[in-house]
Each structure stands twice: as C-alpha cells, then as structure tokens.
Image (cartoon, rainbow, N blue to C red):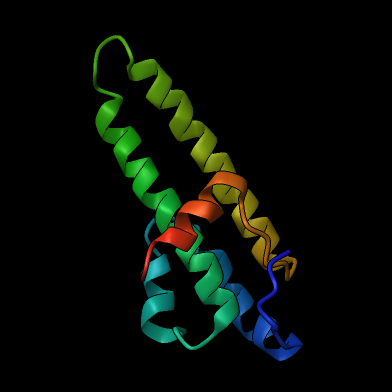
Length: 108
C-alpha cells in the first residue's frame, strides 16, 4: 500500500471516480473534476498508463505474425483494469506492479 496519508472521507469521496478511471478513457473525468482528491488522482494516473498500453496493443495487433501476442496482451490489460476497479472500490491505494512504477515516472 502506498503512503498517501488519506482520510476516510477522501477515499469515500474519490472511490467512484477512481473506479471509473479504469474504464476506457474516463480517467479524464478525474483530471477535470477531482484533481484535488489524492485517492482518485493516484488511480487515474495508473489508468492512464493502462489506457495508452491498450491503445498501443490495438495498433500493433494488426501486424500479421506477432499480432496474436498483442491481442493476448490487450486481454491481460483488460484484466488489470478490472483489478484496478476492484482495488479502487475497496479503498486501497495499491500500486499495480509494473503499471504503478510507470505511472510514477509520468508527470500528469
């Protein structure tokens, strides 16, 4: 768990937006409406990384021989998104193993 020093009220207020951020490109709602909520912002940053990885997989899946690898990777990223929804609704601020490290490197 990440040490964000969150209050229960902040988690409760940000949880719906945090969960929505993992669905397609709804992470943009957090940056528009809840950018001051640390909990939803934390999850939205991870969701941005997942979204762009999914878009890259969609582009590369049309390469004839290696396309199947990207199709499987895209399916894995969809499962990771579901995991992100789960941890955001349970009130946890966990970093998703590879995604969380990449999200820390981006300044959003």
